[in-house]
Image (cartoon, rainbow, N blue to C red; front, side):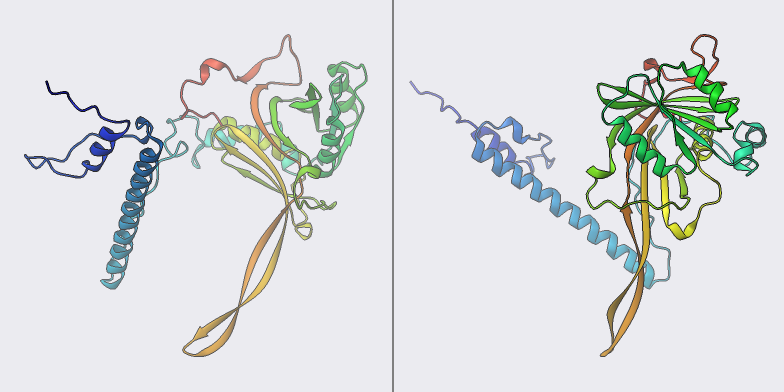
Length: 347
């Protein structure tokens, strides 16, 4: 009797992977794709993986060469080059939102003129910030607060003690503070920020994560006492515009450009990334050869130096008026059932 020869581990997979590009009798190409993870033999698995990786690299280089040739041909003929392919990302494929701000939205401009931040942003009132903590402070809390004091101009720190938050709001209002920031800590780590606009609100509660202090940043710089420039990115909806104006009301509207300080609030997928930098413009000389004649070309390049701290915020609630847990009216509350899609954003 004859016995069928058993295939060794990975023999059948290697034969199928080698025959992937070959044509069958009717001229059609085989559709079966063998994944390296399906091959049990380690040596043959690594060979198949290296071969597939090389094929992808060659195909990518062919596409790049074809695109460059098409652009060069279009320039020689005086035509417009073909449009560059824009990769699909979560940001540019986000779900349509009716609350996205538009430049011709008169209702939006009317709300901006009547909101609580208008006196500060119109320079009628100078921003004055009071910073305090929760009742149980942590080890990293004071270090974080001291760095916030160096970031936000005209900010002051007061110990919380055993006072209720409503009494602190009353005290700050009598002392003509425009905002109150409460740093909440949990397990010896700052984990939330409560920002209250004074005297009429609103109140924003943010979850704080990924905190990196200045001493933990490599090659960090030390901030000066100059008033910083403020950069707000990607606050596109009405809620985002309101949150952006809230951050804007914490800083003076007239920055000192000689200090070269920049504070950035960058919104990406409803996560607000905070960064604090100093910048400098450097002039570099580069040699340029023009038909055998050597020349020197000067180029100006900016450089950034991070000053810290670095952290991430996520909006949890936005409440009308000052802090009130019992009778407060909420403008917006984040709930778990709202996270139904990765392409749905609110800011």
